[in-house]
Length: 291
Image 1 (cartoon, rainbow, N blue to C red):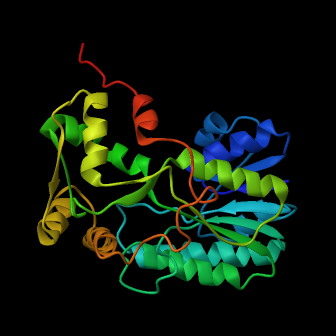
Image 2: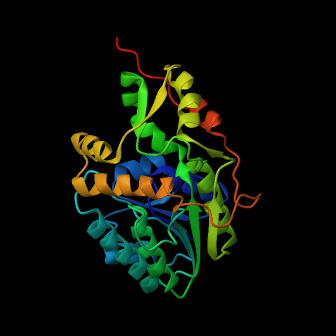
């Protein structure tokens, strides 16, 4: 039996479906029972608080493998405290349940201990999970294609995509479905430890991604605007993000710009994954048309 955290999210949902298709018994863990029933049919739903060690220990008990990640609410203040609470609960519950094989979603840059914004909490979580008496495989993907989806409405309304990543920085960008496929393969094998990067098929600059995205969302003239860091912080706060979350986002982008967050394993057949950004963008739902 395999337990999957974040089972209603992008990677978790795909992991659950792959495991079920392979005939595995799956416990699907998430915040809401109704979403779990809808998005992970066939799995055993476990709805509860990811910061509750006892709840998670129940979800992990009897599992010989688990997929774990650290969910958070971007609109809730206190990101670091939130991530510490969730991370400690997950690591403690895995130890309590004596899960032998763990696949953990992390990120490029998690080997760095400071100055990486959001990613510093993943560094801390890797340290917690490395202390387990278990085989732990850390997946370190590049920038998710799906990170651009949250800005689609703004892109269509304004004709630009604004961020604080330098336009000449080429980044590994990857589909969450490809990351989920790697995770599911490792879970099914009940094998693997250490670090595996998942880098997508090739590195892309943000202007390249935006140019590919524009025609596919009905904005053929879509362009990228590099916003100064302080202006980006202010814009994120104005959009509703807490000040600490806005600051961490800008700090993460600064680490990407400086090359601090990068692949350490290099691009190879083992670290590359197949889905091109254009393929993913072609599958985006069409914008709704007002009646």
